[in-house]
Length: 210
Image (cartoon, rainbow, N blue to C red; front, side, top):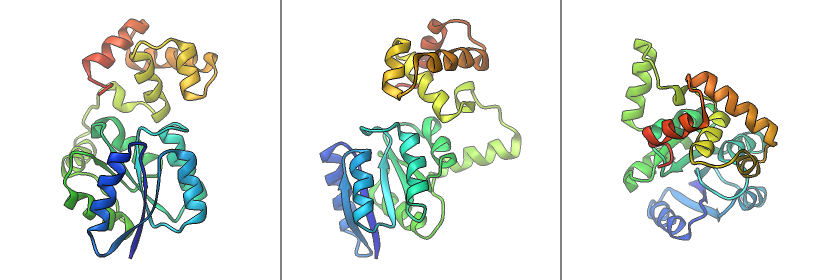
């Protein structure tokens, strides 16, 4: 029996995931959490084989939560469940230790298959993402600038690109204003841009706030 912990801050989403998982005779729900703090408390008290982890959840930033999970509970496989397109978070999730990435528009059957695959020690991404990754490896495909950023740089890019001030980005991500300013300068250099307005325009043009 595969034991699954569900971590999502939306009750309706948790309910849907619980029903899908419970309908499969070989998978059971070990527990639910609506924040990073609740998730670690749950895993400290209940055994789980797989965590279904939402990208947007209260607590630490998503990547920090994922990294902490890999450190504190290395035997637990993490399957990221997200409303964000794969090109925004899939690669960064895998690099941070996730075993798979699945967008919420996939079918219940695909979710169950993904859970089973990561529970066996495999990796899971959609066929579209797998083909994209293979193409990059085989053909040296040039990726757009935002796909070459680190997870933290991408978080700062999205925050600044939404129009937030440096001090507000710092508060949201748990960083100092000086650190965020350093990230901003680094982003401008890496992406060949000149001003914060350019960052806002880039984020809007590539629909990175979706």
